[in-house]
Amino acid sequence: MTMLDRRDVVARLLKDRGEALVVTGLGAATYDVAAAGDDPRNFYLWGAMGGAALVGLGLALAQPDRPVMVVTGDGEQLMGLGAFATIAVQAPPNLTVVVLDNGLYGETGGQRSHAGLGTDLAAVARGCGIQQAWRVADAAGVEALAATIATPGAAPRVAVVAVDPAEAPRVLPSRDGAVLRGRFQAALGLAA
Image 1 (cartoon, rainbow, N blue to C red):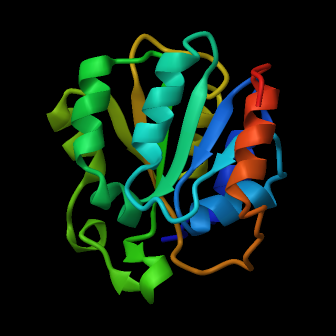
Image 2: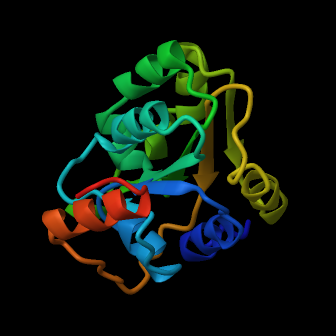
């Protein structure tokens, strides 16, 4: 079975992003988004393991007219499973959480994650009340997901994308939190 290349998946999701705001999880998700093209509307989280989905939730609630996409990994999402329950309760229709599932904790040495050992994160999201939660395992699924990024749906969405565990070269955006916050606020038209 051919696995999806995570870098190609992220590049495709961002290609037609429109006005979507993007929050990235720790590690490879950040590198993949930066590799697709640094943008002031990207908010890279450094060292906030487990927090990406909740930061995306807060942003979606604060910016209800803008689509918000979280790009994170299975390891990070496992650290923040409770986010699914909170997202379900708040139900922002402009939020899409994309979990790049390689079945590994890539940032700590490549140990198998619970997702790699059988935990189905899409089923967990549905169990928490997010009805639009599914797995993506092929190019057609990536195309269908990409078509939803720029427009809010009727409810929050979670897409768990099965990706190859191979590592790609790291593309490091700025790690300066003040700079990232300031440019993101400016992209939103807010005073820094």
